[in-house]
Length: 225
Ligand SMILES: *Cc1c(COP(=O)(O)O)cnc(C)c1O
Picture 1 (tube, rainbow, N blue to C red):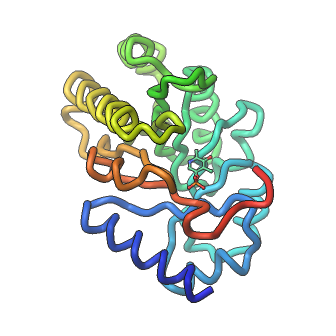
Picture 2 (cartoon, rainbow, N blue to C red):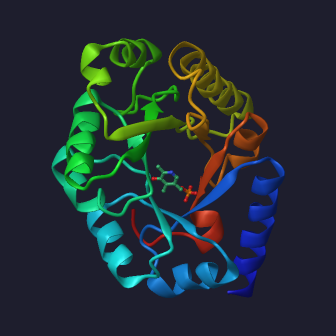
């Protein structure tokens, strides 16, 4: 446990030196492990399953900021919208519309990030830059009053090839800058680049990440995914 806290402190230090926030990815972790980091001062936690996220929200301290980091099914949006802090993995306009609808019902404006497909491997989820540009320019997008886009999110290829990972993170930053310039130049809140996990976060921080999502390095290996 002491080792965990030392690791947390080290990563926390690296993140804040780079101007980034550390999201502790607590999926599959029992409450005691979460509370240990909470007591040390960690407030941002990430989960990828709606049921687990909702259960943990109900049991754990109410000042935790919960991040939905994994793929989100449209029919499950309603369970997390009342309390979630940030949805990282918005990968379709249909999902964004549903978040908007549920956020309206809850009288809130929900911060979201657009997920981009940056990895070489064939991942199922995420926008291409062209798709995002046509969505952001559409009338239908302008109708959405209860979501606020705060930036972008992506996952690099799972590989030892650091040059490839770096190129993919650089690409995500270019996408962010492009959207910032063309659609969000007036927005103070479109400023997040969520990238970097246990194996590649130092590269992500160098490439301009503002949010690193770290699980196994903080908590040890997961039993299941
Ligand atoms: C599990 C997960 C992480 C954390 O992964 P680690 O390799 O354990 O740090 C980050 N982002 C997403 C989307 C995840 O699902």
